[in-house]
Structure formats: structure tokens, C-alpha cells
Length: 174
Image (cartoon, rainbow, N blue to C red; front, side, top):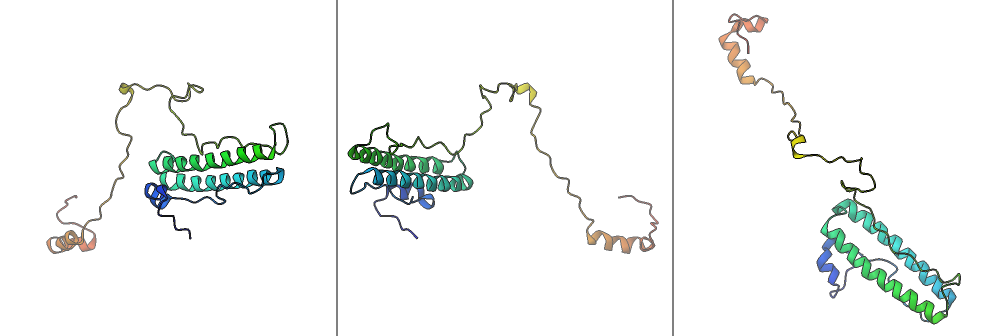
């Protein structure tokens, strides 16, 4: 169980949704091709851990919630630290962009894209609807069938004793 530091500004903003990604961003002591590759692999592991955290937060809070946006902002800071450390380590190791050891990771893709009703790529999918086309609320109410109360049955017994035999002397319908 990780208890956040008192100077963690994200703990106050995110509350219970605060997360800690392992491995944390670091800069290697010595920069060679092997440590740069290890740094890149750890960065990728951190990204996968964030994606798991983001999927969990999306399920709990929703992808359009304020908590989810704050989580994305925190991850953007962590990812920027990883990127800066990776680029600096590769520069110190003397790796150029043509070598196989230098493989920068792309930008972290957003977790999910919310569909839009005004999608320009699929104009016929959601046709435009006027206010006149909307009839009313799209709600169906369940019909509740009430059982006759026992009080009415008892009252009927005293007022119409023939009802015990299945016949009514008053021929009244309810």
C-alpha cells in the first residue's frame, strides 16, 4: 500500500483516484546503449500500467469526468519526464536517430474516443433531427397491478356471504 507524499499536489486533486505508476521515471547512472534500451522498456512498462489505471478509472468515473481529465494531466507530466530522460540518456550515449537502439515511443493514445453525433466522416449515420420531429419523452412506465386488499375481502364477506360460494347476490362488478 503506497501512501502518497504530503507534497504530492495530485493527491489533493484526485483523492481516491490518485495513482502511482511503477516504475517511476528515472535517469540511469551511466548512459550506454544497454541502459537506454532498459530505460525505454521501463517507460513502456509504465505506459502499460497507466493504461490499466486509466481503463479502471474510465469504468468507475467515466471517460468524460473531471477525475479522468485530471488523471490524464498527471500522466502527461509523468510521460513528459520519461520522454526527457529518454532523450537525454540517448544523447549522452551517442545514439543517433538512425541506430536500432534509439527507438522513441510515440505519443500515448487517448484511451477511448467518444462518438459524436456530428461525425463528418459518416454524415448519414446520424441524420439531423428538427425539434418538430421529437414527439415527446421516450419513457415507458411500467403498469403496476395492485392486488385487492384483504380489508375489502373481509368487508365483502360480511356484506355478501354468498361470495364465499363464488356467487354474488349484489351482481356488482369492481
